[in-house]
Structures are given as structure tokens and as C-alpha cells.
Amino acid sequence: MARLLSLIALSAVASASQIQQPLRESSSSQTAINTNSKPLVSTEAIQADIKSKNLLKRAKKLFEIAQLGVDEYNHPTRVIGSEGHLGTLEYIYSTLDALGDYYTLSNQTFNAVVGNVFEYRLVLGDKEPESTQAMSLTPPTPNKDAVFGQLLFVENEGCHASDYPTDTPDKWIAFIRRGSCSFGHKSAAAGKAGAVAAVVYNNEKGSLSGTLGQPDKHHIATFGISHKDAQEYLQDLKAGKNITSSAYIDAIVRNTGTTNIIAQTKGGDQENCVMLGGHSDSVSEGPGINDDGTGSLTLLEIATHLTKYSVNNCVRFAWWAGEEEGLLGSDYYVSQLTESENLKIRLFMDYDMLASPNYAYQVYNATDAANPVGSEELRDLYTDWYEAHGLNYTYIPFDGRSDYDAFIKNGIPGGGIATGAEGVKTKEEEEMFGGTAGQWFDPCYHQLCDTVDNLALEAWELNTKLVAHSVATYAVSFKGFPKRTSVKYSAIEDGPTRFHGPKLVM
Image 1 (spheres, rainbow, N blue to C red):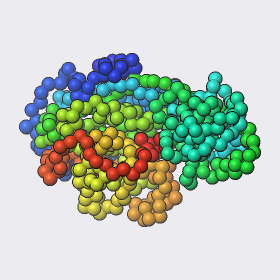
Image 2: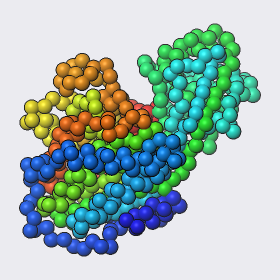
Image 3: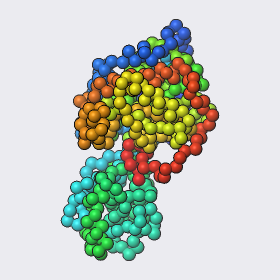
Image 4: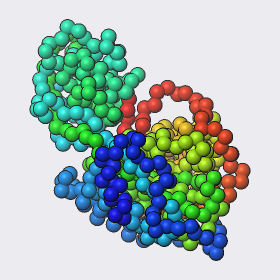
């Protein structure tokens, strides 16, 4: 464990050239292992190992670890760069290290960007729009103080310099329609045009929150508001009325070092690996016990039980850092793979939020037509299992919201299951799964209340059994599963990606 901690400390100053490659650094205590004396893993056996009481015990430990973030954030959190996330990494690594020499362990350190919004306020005219939200990774207003200026309408979607007014007062706030380019691009364009703050209003029903993404020196304090709240301001601006406004954000955006943890079986065909992952971090707003404590702990529980068995194909587990900041860990991991290492990964399975209290059994609708060939076969493995157990399921978009994104963009078949985040359960889904229609699948999504009390244990145990089934199936055989031949694939282009991680980027 001391070695992991030293790597984490070094990661804060590591440059890209210094960062270790995946699966090149392993525990010095580990030696070659002969698993021939162990029975071959079977889906029935490893599913029988899964017990909700053991999962709950791990969740309680994780919440205890999240308390380490209280001193800095005033509440439990496991956001990257916090003591809560460092404690999470220590827990994962020490648990794996205690399993003996079954796995090769590696730590992949990289630089990441983390932000925290402490306070914000937006007043347009004489009102504070009820839907106002500060964008993630927004810089603060100058000197972390309120700025005052006239609200000015921006033409089109504010993606080009020509969209912005040129005859402006010394201080003004840009009012920009969502669409065509990312929020970060809009913020930078408004900054270049001389605005002191930017407000992006939704171009469809609902409130608007998202992330500016990678920091840019031209970014300015940026807010999002709903389509409904924007209407009266649009009418007044088009009528030529002056709208004196003010904006205030107290926030930080900083670089931090963080770490992915990888565990690969020493047994099995090392040229043909089944890979699965979950993210080890939470948002800054809460402890993230469902998101994604349940996914990362599911992997840890299955990795523990797998040591009782032998495998024909290698199994590679990954705990990603920085998912909540925009899939940073998984993006970096895939970017470092050589073509030959890429081709060793036969498929990647993503497990994020497996115990939402108002759950539905959700399967990513990963078709071969729009994704690397093999993705649909994985999708069907999940649905076949649900059907065999007399359970309902629904398909959800495979739209870049979690850590599968970099894999499918680099030719690796992917898929996964979930139980729902901020989506609203329909009446039909209430009939299929129980729960309450009209409410979020996880009412505590990205909030302080995402604690141990926010878990549907029956759904978590059942989904962990399905994850175990997926591992056992491919650890035994890839028979009938498409072979990898390329790190590229031809995707169907549906337009710009709205998500890159859990937050909207445009």
C-alpha cells in the first residue's frame, strides 16, 4: 500500500512522459501463480458467492472513507483530489493486494482537472431565475466578487466571433442559446468578445447544467438557465429594452494528480482479455455510494471471489478516477494503449450505478450497427439473463455518459447495465419494476444524500450476480464472440455528442 500512496503523491507533478503504462507496474510481492488446481469458474458457482450483506458491508466502509473529505468540503465526498478519494484508492488497492498473487496489480497516474463551486448568484433585471445553475469547471467572477453589466443578446448559438455584438458597454453579460458547439467553446468565445460573464439558456424544455470541460484562459463565469426562464428576457432584448444584471460565482478550478487501479488475472490467455470497469470517484457534492460506489464495490466483490477459480481467458478489472470530471481516467487509459495492447481487449463492460432506489433494470442499447462488432452480443447476454430470471428490462441510450466511451471509439466492443440516474420513471416502468412514477430513478443523484441509505439492496445483489455471470461467461470462452481485427470502426454519425461523461458538454 505504501507504494500506491507514493505513486499518488508523485501523480500531482507527473508529466505525460513520466506516467507509467497500463499493466507495466506490479506488486513486488507477486509471483507467477499456478491456478490449474482450482476449478474452472462457472457462472452458477460465482453467482452463488454474491450476497447482499457483503455488498452492504463494503458500502458502509466506503461511506466511512467518504467522511475523510469533510475537513476540506464540509461534507462527505470522494471527489478526485480529496482525502475521501485517496482513502478509496487505498481501500481498493489494499483489498486486492491482500488476495495474494492471483492478480497483477498496476497503478496508472495522470493529471486531472477538478473544480468546486462554493457559491453563485445571477440576477437578470430585477429577478433571479429559479433554474439558475453554475456550470461545472466554471472559473469564478473576477476577484470572486459580483460583476455588473448589461445583458446582451448573442446571435445564433454564440459559436463564432461574428455572433457577438461589437458595440458594447465596458461591462456586459452574454446571453447565449444552447446548441451547435460546447458550453466551453461558448464561454471562451464570450470571453474573447469582452463579456464579464455568460448565461447559456436551454433550447429545449427543462433546466440546463453542464460542464465547460478542459479549462481555457478565455473562459468566463458561466451559468445555465431553463428555456422557460429565458423567454421573458428574450422578448425584452428583442424589443430593445436594457436589462441591467449582475453575476457572482465563487469557485476554484485546479489541477490534481489521481490514479487508475488495474488488476489482471495471472491465469488465462493473456492475449484475450475480458475487461470491466467502474469509477472510484464521486462528485464533490456528496459521498457517491450509489454513484459509483455500487459499481466499484461490485467489481471488488467479484474480484475477491474469482480468486477461488481458474480462468481460460484473462480478466482485467479497472477502477477509473476522474469519471465525474469527464471520463478522464478511462480516456487516458485507452489513449495509452498500443495497437497490440488494444487488440488484446476482446470487450469492455461498464458498471455504473447498480442500486438506484427507484430502479429499473437498464441495458445499454449497444448495437453492432453503431458500435464495434460484438457490442450487440454483449447487450444480448444481459437481456437473455434477465429474461431467464423472469425479469423486465429496458434499453437506454449508449450516448457517451460513462467510461465505455473511449473503448468503443477505439474499436473495442462495449456495453453495460445500470439502474438509472436523474431520469424520470414512467408509469409503464412503474408497472414493470415497481417504485414511483414521476420521480428520478435515483432521487439522490449527485447529492449529499447519496449514502448507504440510498441503495436498493435487492437490485444491487441481482445486478452483481449478472456482472458475475458476464465475467464467468467470457472468462471461460469467447466462442461465437466476434474476433478483434482493428482498433477502428465505422460509426453511424448522429451529430455532435451531447455528453462526455455524466454532464452535458453542449
